[in-house]
Image 1 (tube, one colour):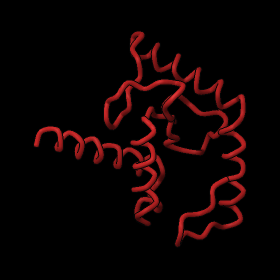
Image 2 (tube, rainbow, N blue to C red):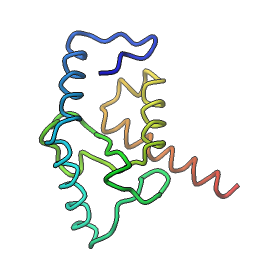
Image 3 (cartoon, one colour):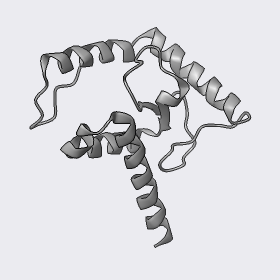
Image 4 (tube, helix red, strand yellow):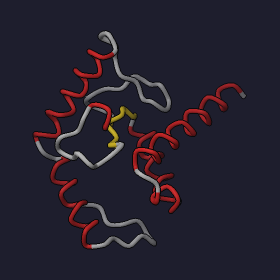
Amino acid sequence: MREPRLGLAWSDRRRAMRRRYSLYMSSPEWFTRRQRWVEEWSDAHHGGTPHCLICGIEWTLSGDDLHHRTYTRLGHERTADLIALCRPCHRELHRRMEANPEWRRRPREQATDVLVAQMRHQRNWKQIS
């Protein structure tokens, strides 16, 4: 389990949640859930392949991440609770989320959705320029 970022203190409740999260993320259940997510996503998108929601690169089960929009159903996630992100975009999303207390005060789903939209817009703007 990683330690809190410099300047961020974790409560005992947060530490317990992080331990639970870390155990789950390395469990066979999580790897099964990832595989099932790909199948559900593909069925919903007529057999398509997932792509990173920010940069658009093709997403792979073996090399990329699923970001939790919410931890409410951790271990029992719905398909919409998870979004496909390549590893660099996932790291940047978390960096931005953790860098500004305003994002941490918002519901995680809302913060994720707004940040993803901003990052997509910034990326698209850079491509046009």
